Image (tube, rainbow over all chains, first blue to last red; front, side, top):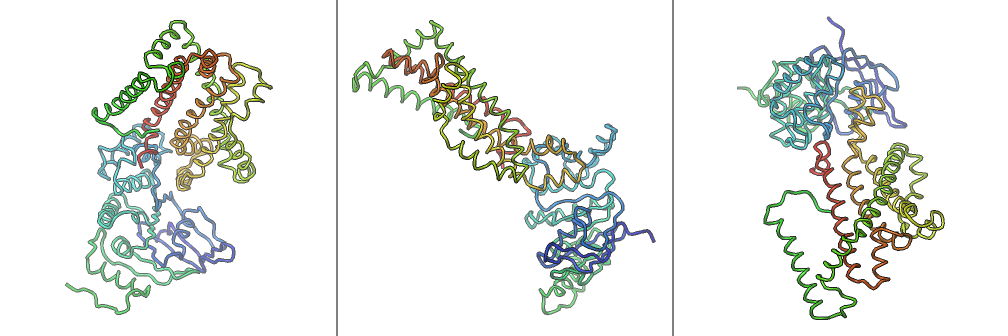
Length: 246
Length: 258
């Protein structure tokens, strides 16, 4: 088996008197889509900062191989740049101009914004902006994609649409993905594995595998079953219902 | 300051109607002799005075003198105030140290400097430029500091993630991010500078629109006084419209359309 591109090995993170992570160990396989859920304030964003090497652990080790890109919770497109300029940030180290243009054109096609290259972010809808954010992170030879509640500011329907878009994009451009989210439906629909973190100091409380090809429907019985499992694990659903069987 | 929403041609006519009504009221009040003619010139007197001043070349000279001083003082304030604001915005401790002093000078009317301006720089362009600088510099510093502090930190995360160096972070993140707020500050400050130039020239000038007004008062030429007032007001509007054009630059418009 190939080395895991992302490994968190017995990590402790402390900020002063607060211990955020204790004995945290996670290993993520190449091409795997892992969703991390947990109570708010348990350090989900901190985990992404560890994975992107933005933050060093107090002890333990975080190992990664390949180029890592992060998509943030809040609007992080540069509003003074066009869609084209924003996406090209992801190709800054590609010197060949024609190749850059070709990849840009492909990407605009993939996110279905071909006619919008010269638009500014404020001229786009929330869902369109989020697609541009994904494009900027996906373009070039990104290996690992870290997503910090990327769809949390969108309305419910747009959020579902964006999940489908992301799943579709990942079929064309397979990546190792870590998605941090408070949306358990989102986690169950998108991920191969859902990791539930405990209250602070956080460690892995449980894991659920979703044995189903991606992309999936939100209402697929296996997705719904995973939602049930995660909810009851978090103590949010007391009566364990039977899985919906067709 | 008005926002740049597109207006229909009908709406464009409305301000003109108001102006015409104001002119009409002015004509009626002066025709009714509510005030003595010597202290309330009619629109016709003012128009005649305007033609006289233009023909003598004095009006143009005064406009040029005032504009030169405002432009010089304002440009000096912009090219020093914005960098100082950038510096303070990025250095928390220096900012804490200097902000009370800057706020003090911002709150101090620049006109309070007039006696020193004359004592230090005599009469002419220099004291006026100094006063305009004092009027513009401090508000520009404060506005730039506030703009820098307001930049969402995620932009710097992106700059870090995509490998921007220090110079790129300044030119491609900080400066474009603060541009809309700084331009708004420039418009406000330019208006302030234009107010100050008139006052300064009244006392420390030998030319300029402020001096022209004072001269008209001394010569009891109320028609020329009103003529000067109108020219000052119109130029003030023109200056704001010119700076307003900056807000239409595509890479800056985002700041006004959220």
